[in-house]
Amino acid sequence: MIEIVDLFKSFETGDKKNPINALNGISLKISDGEVFGLIGTNGAGKSTMMRLISGIYRPDKGKILMDGQPVYDNVEAKKEIFFGADEPFFFSNSTPKEMMNYYKDLYPKFDCERFFSLLDRFGLEKVRKITTFSKGMKKQLVCILGICSNTKYLFLDETFDGLDPVMRQAVKSLFANDMETRGLTPIIASHNLRELEDICDHVGLLHQGGVILSQNIEEMKLGIQKVQCVFENENDLSGLKAKTTVMIDDKRGKLHTLTLRGSREEIEGLFRGLKMVFFEMLPLTLEEVFISETEVVGYDIRKIIEG
Image 1 (cartoon, helix red, strand yellow):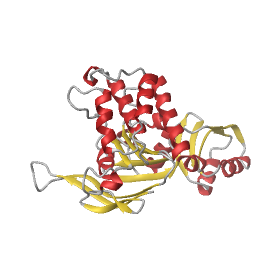
Image 2 (cartoon, rainbow, N blue to C red):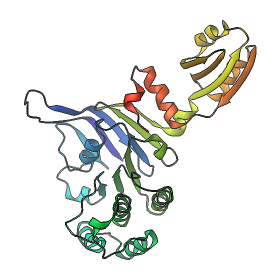
Image 3 (cartoon, rainbow, N blue to C red):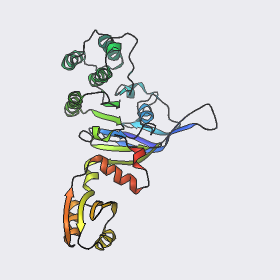
């Protein structure tokens, strides 16, 4: 498990009196054996958070523990962490094979045989200069290096950016396989909720250096419902609001699209006691769940979530 407690990080600018506050008192827990999605817009603190957890940056305040041990300046802990940045780093004029030789010295459990096998599977040449690779090919290579390092934790920033749909599914299948066979825990940062919805078990939403939400996706969806309806008597809406939390009421003519807090059974029970012209329960996407939650606490979702 990774525990993050009251974490602060700032960066100096030209004006020493006005540093950039990247993270402001963040606390999170990342459980083993699940895919954790870290989401938010550019500048929300995702990449800073990833570098702190990976032990690249030193926190200004607070602590980061991996299985009870601090990460920064801890060589043994870092052997269980692979970090792939948004803009991957490769040595000048290096090839995939040369990068493999570098990483196998860092990670004692690096699987060279599997690395070459995955290169073939993804159609990447082992002796071709990485500088000639496309953005998507570089992302694939980072994922393969990370998987073959056989670390317990795999941190990837904007993992799917630049990957076509086929390659996205291929990468996701790698995650699923290693989670099942060796207990891999992937932590994926992205600004795009739709990319993460079908793979993440738990999601944390960052905004302006703080955590708005950190919750299991299925539990989150079970507690919020979306309804389209037309009331026979509009006054019944006031009675409904007295019995449950109406998070969003988007009204167009007589048609209401309501997002309400509660289980499906609870919401259906409330509407059974009303005379309705039209009533239908609709599925919620992860993006809609976060829109609902963030609007409740007063954030402008258009500035928080892209894509």
